[in-house]
Image (tube, rainbow, N blue to C red; front, side, top):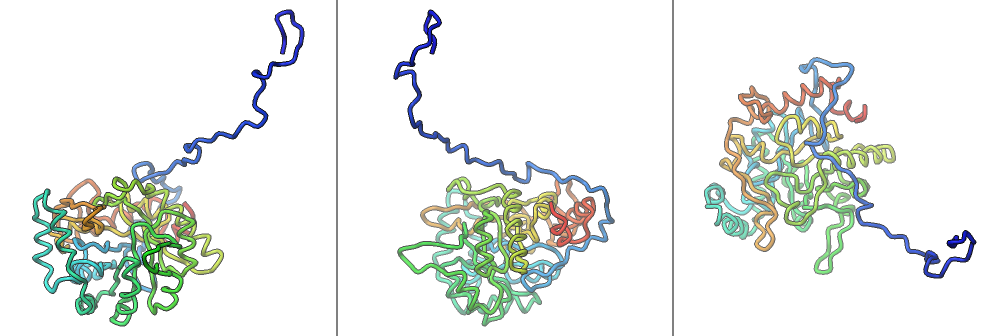
Length: 383
């Protein structure tokens, strides 16, 4: 230091910095920019193709799909009749094994009660409806009814119920079993019960086992290593789900899909096995489906957009499957209305301009503008 006369002198002790100052970091330093559907758009390619030449067909977990659409395992969306209707259009419906279809011989009255209950009574109606036990004979009956429509039977259960229902459903004709929870991880710890071992479960199951939901590349890669036949992406993005509000958990869908698709590509390079990625939730219009595919999804799982079909059992409403919780519901009943047939919603012709009808026509148009003929070609050509 220099004194007023310009003479150098040693600094005082209080002027010197601490010998070992700690490195101070903010929690904000780890925050990363993420993107939802509203944050991105698709840039047209330098070459385009005719939309009629776009082929949306693919093999999904050993099943042939003509369109990349799965119907959510929600009671307002899927029953055996709806599964048959979607199969005829080329998609795949997933039945909720722990829903009203497997608790009641005739669930029509229960569905009517949920659909018409006043807003201040709907949570009580949901809790009451799901208090009845799941019945083995009804699970077998619903599987038989789905297969009788000509559809492949795909079913979903939570990890706690998977060990019981997985082998049973495989024996009764199910072609795909989805282990679905709010947030899926490769390693779940619990002190009150024996958690499901996914690696063991996929090893002894005679049919493909898909797993969801996650938003993490690392978790998705581990799920693939443990035998997942497909990985579903999305925590709380759906219109009937309030997980992001209640628990504060979730990642915007474009980023989540792209991250998990990156894990799929890395796993394919290491193992030689291709594991499809399914974007689950948050898509209401054709443009959002196109963005999900462009981000890396092989297929999309739709809830509320399909609950609007005349064939859907929800009577113009939809609700999240975590909504019946008597202590911490993470879903809500929403009124989506009935806008027409499933054919109209998926293939048109559209009578509105908001992108909520002719979803597959919009996807074909978008892929044509990007210059790709198939979904697999879209994945191979990058993002």
